[in-house]
Amino acid sequence: MNKILLIIQREYLSRVKKKSFIVMTLLTPVIFAGFYGIMIYFSIQGIKGTTNKIAVVNTNKTLTEKLVSSKNATYTYVNKPLAAMKADLAKDGYDYVLYLPEFSLNAPAGIQLLGTKQAGLNLNNKVSDDVENAIRNQKLKQSGLAQQDLDNLKSSVDIDMKKIGETGKEEDSSAGASTIIAYVGGILMFMFILLYGIQVMRGVIEEKTNRIIEVMISSVKPFQLMMGKIIGIAMVGLTQFILWIVLTGIISTAVVKIYADKTNITQSSVSAALKKQNENKIFKEATEKSPIGNIQKSLANLNLTKIITLFLFFFLGGYLFYSALYAAIGSAVDSETETQQFMFPVMLPLLLGYSLSLSVVTNDPYGNMAFWLSMIPFTSPIAMMVRLPYGVPDWQLALSMALLILGFIGTVWVASRIYRVGILMYGKKTSMKEMIKWFTYKN
Image (cartoon, rainbow, N blue to C red; front, side):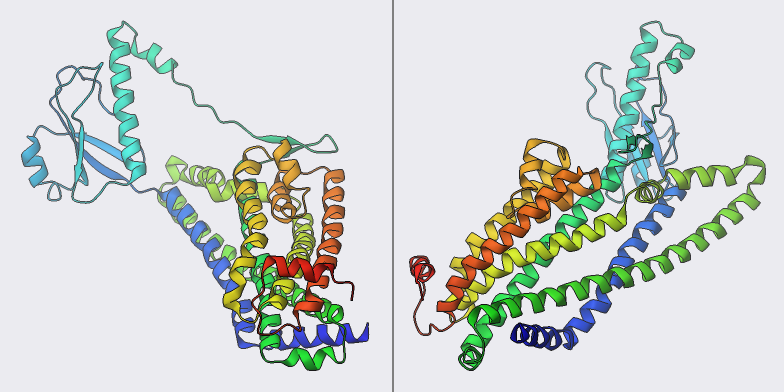
């Protein structure tokens, strides 16, 4: 046991002292906080809104219903020919010109949106919806409906999503917030398992090619060497991840405070300038209903402590599961170029779990496919992380964790039988058939 601890200490200290480790540990939280700050910034900008001024040239005698302006698009009807309007578009202070030619209300065609810059997808969809609504209203009016009846047909529905907790209490929920956490958790799990697993493989290859292994094997058993390397690098990963959580929390809190102060300043200035119109209340409601506001409200109802704790467990379990196989691959080859034929079969379940989890699990996190993906040790680290924000029964969590531990023990046993032979093999190109023979050797 003392020998394994010495190997763990060596693997851990040799990596945490590297400049690359220190730089990435400090830089990654800054990047995450920067992304968070950008999201908040554009959310605030979205509250302010960007208004596109659109000149409407309507030569259609049938379509007398006018387009209704909104926050993102204001329509102004002009009595100028299309050619003249295009020539003087910027001069007249418009961003785009919308041309409505003569067409049948039953088969509209030839409508154009022209501008000096390419219209974005959101604006294009917005204008299309507005024209469709104008045509629909025109057709309804022709059928004999009064304007009051037409207005009564329109209804705005705002669904307040709730989740009934285990105690029977209603909790605010958000599919958007759960999906974001699921995607981020799944991607991070995939990246970390792959990154640190490959580090184990490269470490074994480096020591093997430098003939350091021959000296080390004279003092320790191959199994002790493999376990020391795997656990040592696992501790490096946990150290880095915990530092990321702490630093990201500190930096993100500072970023949120900065933007909160900025929001308060903007709110005060708007309220002072437009006090009679009760702009302060409008701004507050818009902030609460913004995407970031909804996500922050939903995050407050998620058990983030539980999610982070389980992330650490499944990262550790998934890493130990796959790193044992990567260690076996590293022991069987003499250079990194020879690993490709062996890496693909090992990476395939991880890639399969990643792709299926982000598609199937997020669409139906409680279905049979989601259940089995989160039970099979090859895919459970990623699948379970994607399911956690939606809520997973405790018995499924316990079963998944137990199966992952058993899977890790099994892969370590298989990998150690290959590792003990391959670590001392030199100058021979290894095949899958040869590795199976190593597995069956008794001594």
